[in-house]
Image (tube, rainbow, N blue to C red; front, side, top):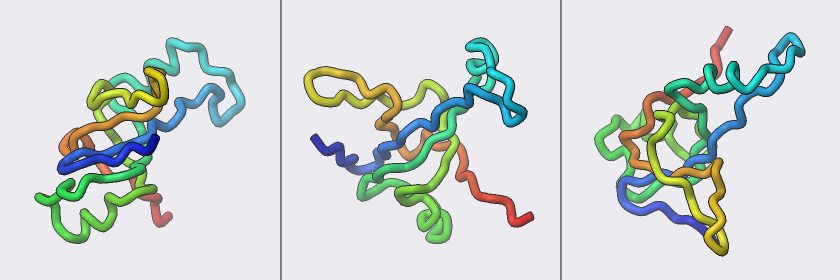
Length: 107
């Protein structure tokens, strides 16, 4: 089944929280929870036809499928797949629930 957001909705996939630090240290569950305390990293999969209308053309171009964004931790709804199974890493949320666009540094 394909999920197609309508109007102001966006479908995002949550990025997995690091289980191992850059230095190779295994992070305990408490530390992983701390790293995702209020915000979560996500990738946009699809956007509704009216999503991001209030933004400038330049910002709208950045918010397309594949863009990395920061969302509020508990925003949106978990997407149901198949026979009532929850796909926990997919969320359907309002465009206003996206807090920031993440871009690579030029440095």
